[in-house]
Image (tube, rainbow, N blue to C red):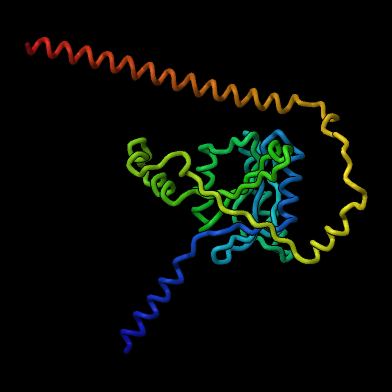
Length: 268
């Protein structure tokens, strides 16, 4: 009887340790407005911030956020940024606001966010947090009429392969992984309380919708043109590096084939 109870207890404990898969990210409307405001104020510069909330079963609730200072390449400034994060979370805890880190948000431009830095940031977060997400917001796409919010997490298969210190092209082919399998997109659900919904209804203007084209008044396109040129330069640099790799490979292949033919002629 005692052995049966012990096995039952161990089975229950093991079952409790297995967390259900993440199904949806529930984000408060106020948090979404904060993210939009922060990203649009500094656009086209890229900004980031902390997400706070709760991990409840298969739902990751995002109830608050705060922005990070714009980072610069200076050790003292990086230390000040870390102290700023700790101080902000301490202040939120004192006023009884959720201060559990559930991830971070960052802005992007023209959908360019799949970088090695994003993967490394995910791995650093997941060393201390069991489940975390990254909210990606694209202000340029939102200007075209789409609410460009994405909640991303690293796929388990890619994360295991990356941590194995054997991250090669052969392993990627063996695991049948491509760039599509690196990130998993989690559905985003916007949640508002009844009081906030009623307040937003009161804020809606009673005037009819105007047909004025206010976009024509925004004549400054230099920042976006500059960002596009930066992306173009980065792509050209990548192309140049790949061409050099191909040329080195072709020279090595030609040299090896010449040595092989020379060896075959000597054998004859």
